[in-house]
Structures are given as structure tokens and as C-alpha cells.
Image (tube, rainbow, N blue to C red; front, top):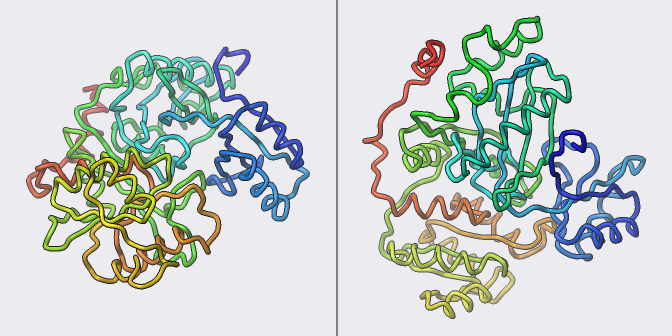
Length: 406
């Protein structure tokens, strides 16, 4: 990274609690904490204060071999994206760039992912392609390389670089028509990218006739005791894909395929909102849209107080630990169509917020735990698209067009 002149979040490696607290002060809160060897974001958290660091180090030192350090990086609040590339040692090909809907802090495997990027400027796209090429050459990659980035105020930071294939290779191969595995294997056997008919650099200059949206799928009903709150630890067990000429239609297809039901509010239909303080302003905007759409809004005491102060009509519902009737009775009434629930912590299964989300899962009530996902869902609910009227996209045709260079 130093040789390539590419920025990354400031970070430290620590072995003890004292070192962790000092590193957090030097780097500045919030910080991302993780063991040095992880897959799927296991045991990874975002620490917002010293209490979070103390709790994390207490847990991690009990269960992880501390001959390896804990990594602490400055948490970059921004948009995460992922790039897979093929390199022959000299030239490189980027079939496509995938932008995540959920902001940094949600594992890439649990995030809704969009190709091509839908909010990035051309400057950011050019930077992502340039940085990926620098990595591929500097690491002398022959085959596949995967890079994950965070974009904040048009500045690109590197999260990680993997000189290997990734779980997104099948996804980007499907939606672009570029046979990434075939081309990568041919590179390892000595062929050059420029002779393969797909060019070099960014495929089709990043243009695509379709949007493709990957939506994660979960198995929370079968995973007892797991909090459904999304975070740095990957929890999804599958994914589905929606392809359409417009971003909104592709998103609708993906959400429907993932099991989201788009209901029209009926008599008494309601949405429960219970969010942490930092999400309350965003929740008020979404609550207004849901109220305008015809839903009655319920909130736990803190959330309801804030929403009412913002002139959003919201009824108070007691937490699970409160006197009956409380939120349990509302969940069991059959009137709740959706839940928006975020909390600053999710590791303790005895917290009200965790038990609340588990109960909703057992009752098969869609529970959204990231504000970006909630925004996408609310916008889709209020759209006038009929999925039965949407165009069907033949993926095989995408591959035929790509092979012809069209």
C-alpha cells in the first residue's frame, strides 16, 4: 500500500486490553476490532467507546489464541464496494464494480449489492479501477484478485485485498457475461488477456443495459438464539439475484425473490419502529413515508417520543420486559406487517431488543435491522411497479452478447 500510494484506514495491532484502549484513543472512535485471522467476519465488531473495547477484549481473550494479535482499524462511515479482476501479470480486466446498499459495518455477504454502481461519480469509478490495477501488478497476480473498498466523500480507502477468487465471482460473471473463471485459468496457463477478446481495463467502460441486484437470504428460523441484527459478522446463508433495465425494478425482483412480501396496508395494519439514538432522524423520515402509505406506526418509548417530537403520529408500545399488554401482544395480533429495529448492541441474548427480534422471526414478521435496507424497502413499497409486468431477462443472452463483444 505504501509503494502503491493508496490510502487505507489507520490501524494498530494489539495483544492486551491496555494496548487496545491506547490504540483506540490514538486511532479515534469508532474502531473496527477483529482477530487477525477471520472468515466471514467472525468475532468482528465496531467499538464506539471504551466500554465496547473492554467488553470485546474480555470475550475475545477467552475464546481466541492470543498468540495472534487483535486488529484495530479506524471505522470509515461510507459506502462499501467490491471489485473482482483478472490479471495476466501485465494487463488486467475488471468485468464490473459492485456497490453495497448498506453502509460500512455490515458484512459484504449480508449486504444488498448492486451492479453497476448507482451513486458513484466517474472520478470514484476511475480510482477504483486504477487502484485495482496497481494491486494486481504489485502483487504479481496471475489469475483472479478481489479488492474491497470504502468510499467516503469521494475518497477511496482500501479495506482488504485478496489475491484469489471470491464469492462474488459467480455473481459478476452471471450479470456481465464475462466468463471470469475461464479467462483466469487461461491466464495461469500463460495466455494474455489482450488475446482473449474481452479487452483490458474496465469492461464496457462500466456501462450495462441492465441493473443487477443481489439480495442476501437468511435461515434465522433454523438458527436458534442468533440475533438477526446485521453487523460485521456474516449471517446470510444464501443469495438471490434480480436483473432488470432499471434499478428500482431490479431491486423489486431481488427483494421478492429473497422472500420479502409487498403488502398493501389493511385495516389496523402497522409497522413497529425501535431504533438506536443515532438512527432516529432517519427513522422519522421513513416513518413519515410509511404513515403516508397508510400504516399505523408504533414505537418503543424512546423511539415513539422522538417520532412524535418530529410530528410523526406514533403510538407507544411497551418493551418485552414491560407490563402486559406489551410488544409481544402486538406481535401476536397479526397486524404487524414490518419491523424496523436497530440497537447499539446485539451480543447479549438477554437484551430486550434481541429477544424482540427473535420473537418477530419466530412469527415470520419481516424485520429490517439496517437503515439502508429499510429505506430501499420503503421506497419499493411506495413504488407503483407490478412485478408481474416486468421484463424477463435471459442471462444466457447476456453471455452470448458479451462473447460477441456487444
